[in-house]
Length: 181
Image (cartoon, rainbow, N blue to C red; front, side):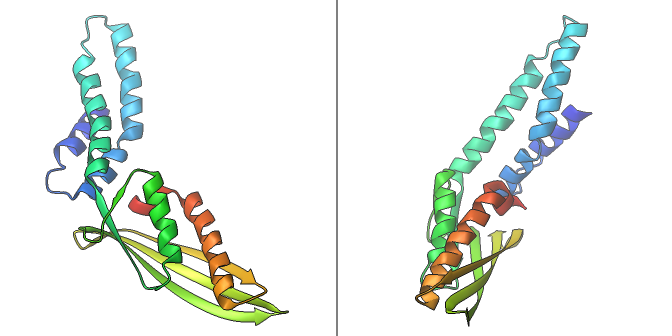
């Protein structure tokens, strides 16, 4: 039953975008591990059981995830001119071997809502960043990260401080949840 589920997912990828293929295949990871354990048990119970064809399929699926990741190109758009939040996302993608280009069918769109205030001599920037991931004009993932920064010198410095908090929250979220939530 587990093998059929994994095979069905693997066989129904042709009409999906690269990002959707990666998402579907990654969703099979835990099933593959469970199926591999069952293969070894079946082999122990029935020695002539040929588990190599099943094992080969599972290895090919894991390899295809890497192949699709290497083919995926992502573009990033932000509503902020400074790009300080955009650069944090670019760094996370680069650290995970994703390619970035100006034009792509897979887009990450950042929309920042910034509120500035001043309290007790501190400049405060409260930022809510909505991160949409679209592939072939379909929303694949939507995440919201809130961050607060403060500075004793200016609103811009408070915004930079908020971007550093955004970066920490972005890393906590992780690349898989960012792209496939």
